[in-house]
Every structure is written in C-alpha cells, then in structure tokens.
Image (cartoon, rainbow, N blue to C red):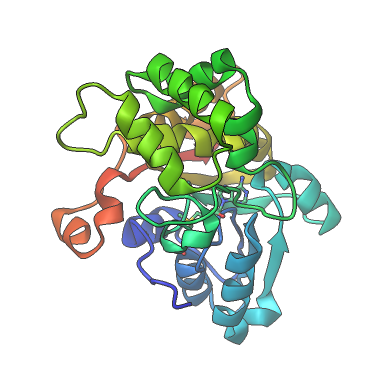
Length: 295
Ligand SMILES: C[S@@+](CC[C@H](N)C(=O)[O-])C[C@H]1O[C@@H](n2cnc3c(N)ncnc32)[C@H](O)[C@@H]1O
C-alpha cells in the first residue's frame, strides 16, 4: 500500500519544535512518518527520534521510510499513553519535545479491512492496534442500549443517539452486525432528518471509534504524564481533529499553566491550516495545533 506523505501543519510544527542536533524528540503518532522524517532531517546529523504508534502496519511502513535514519531512530509499537514507561525502558530521562498528530491516518481510513470508514466495505473492526482490544463489532453487538446511547451521545457530538442505539439493538436481535455497510445502513435508517452537509454515519462512526480505542482517556493521560518528561524550554505540540480532542488539549494545558505552573501556553488560539494546505490535503481542514512550552 502506498502511504500519502502530507504531514498536516508540517511547517508550523517544525517551526515550533525547532529540532536541533542535540535534541531528543518523541513522535507519539508516527503513522506514515511524515512529521518524523522532517524532524530527523532538521535535527541532522545527531538528533534522536523516538517514534511510537499503536498500529503495526504503520510501524512497518515507518520503519521502511526512516531506514536512512535508523541509527538515530527508535521505533516502538505501543500506546503513547504509556510514554513514561517507554522512556524509562529506553533509559531516557527528559526529551526536547513531544509531538502528537491525533486520530486515524488516511491509510487506516481508506483501508476497507480496518473498518474505520462507512465509505469502504469491510469488517467492523476500527482497532488501531489489532494485537489486542475489542473490535467495534463486539461493542455494537454486546453493549446495552443505554451504553451505546451514552457512547453515541458523549463521543458523537450529534443528535439521534437514542434512535441509533435502539436501531442497533433491534437489528442485532435478528442478525449480528458485522460490517461497516450494515452499521451505516442502520444509522441512516434511524436518523429522521439527515444533515445536509455530512453523512449521518460520520459522527456515529467517530463515536464508536473513540470508544474502541479509548482515545480521549489516552490523550488526557499522555498530556499529564508527558509534561514532566519534557526539558525546561522544550515543547509539546498537539494536532487535534475534532472538538472533543481539542477541548481536552486546551483544558489540560490550562490546568498545567496554573499553580504549580509546569507549562506556558504558546498558542493562545489554535493554529489552523492555510487555504493552500487544505486544498492540497482536505484532511487538514479540521486540524488544530496547540503548543505549550515547559517552564
Ligand atoms: C494522523 S496519523 C499520524 C500521521 C503522521 N504524523 C505522519 O506524518 O505520517 C495518527 C497515527 O497515530 C496513531 N495513534 C493514534 N492513537 C495512538 C495512541 N494512543 N498511541 C500510539 N499511536 C496512536 C494511529 O495509529 C495513526 O497511525
């Protein structure tokens, strides 16, 4: 599979990180290694990169792409929420920066067999890390109607949570829900007035994906655990793609800016992609970058 090489807000990220040859940089969401590659280039000849991803396929691809830099790169298949342990095992005390480019990658989204998108037919999986955890099909076929409604309401930011949860439960009483298209059709039929601009399944799929991967808890944990692991003057750069993620970044940064003050927030407002970037890479449309500096 070919990986697209459009790291989002790359110029801005590099400007804020300002990689240098004596630095140690963590890319917690290595993906196709677009940002990682730029960090390695800019920190030549001796800057070190620790790249983490939950997805084994992404890790394999990143390994190939970063081959020319393997001597100063450590690639880890793992969850960024375990950053503390990962750095301890590598015997690294503090790092110069942590970058997170959240969510799923374009590659994960377009690969039908991963089950992330209602636009590609495939098994209802949605796990970023397929070596463990429960696929989305397990959740939709076993959670109670109330639990499903809670997930759809909390993580889907949209209406219709109750109707969709009820439709899922009714459907599975007859046939288990196994594929993306089955779930998409159930959602479409449950929604009375489909929104004009986005497909009604967009937010419901987002909600289930967040639950399958425990995305928001992982995010909050990595910010809390990560801040003390950054050297004084070092930076945390976080790119989010929807308001639930952005709210966590904003509020967790603010908490750590108050007493005891551990960081200074550099971006009072989030940085968004330019029109030019959005037209070259539509995924950049909803990206928001927030940056904090360790005091
Ligand atoms: C948007 S992509 C990153 C793209 C990358 N910055 C690039 O330039 O190619 C997000 C990646 O983060 C990974 N990911 C998401 N949550 C994670 C977590 N909690 N721990 C580790 N990796 C995670 C996903 O598997 C995916 O590969």
